[in-house]
Length: 184
Image 1 (cartoon, one colour):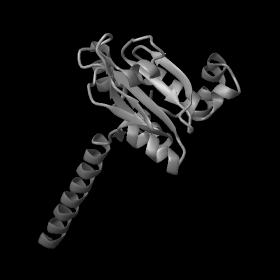
Image 2 (image 1 turned 30 degrees about the horizontal axis):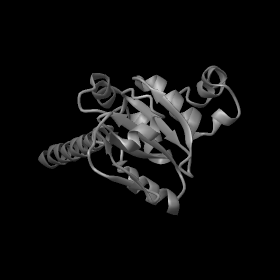
Image 3 (image 1 turned 120 degrees about the vertical axis):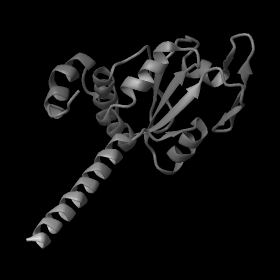
Image 4 (image 1 turned 180 degrees about the horizontal axis):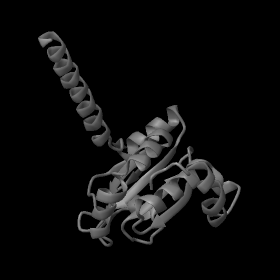
């Protein structure tokens, strides 16, 4: 009888440990952020769309998006599978070289020239910039987006649906059908 209780206790402990490890690894899943230069280099070898999160240290909505949108498991999964993800501090003073083009800090605008180019001169934070696999601009999207709205946008662009239908058509049709099991 003692052996049975000991075996049950051992199995329960093992199961609990595995469950905690599985839960812990699910909670620690994060977006794989890389630099603009690294994303460009990877795109040359393995073409994929790139998202550039253009932010500043003082931007409150940027911080909210980091805490609420970029931590959503469905968002993380989709981004890591379909995009190269870049975080670009618009006010970085570091020189950025992409495809042989140097971007320097612009004292007049207190902004790096890379951010100015990506935002097409409209400095607004946060702005999510979508680039295709050849590093051509698809769309800059200024402002905060919650996880559900962001998931709709990243799947709309990630699945090339923007080439076939309007965003409103996508949200009401394709998105609802494709992601009906998503807990957003």
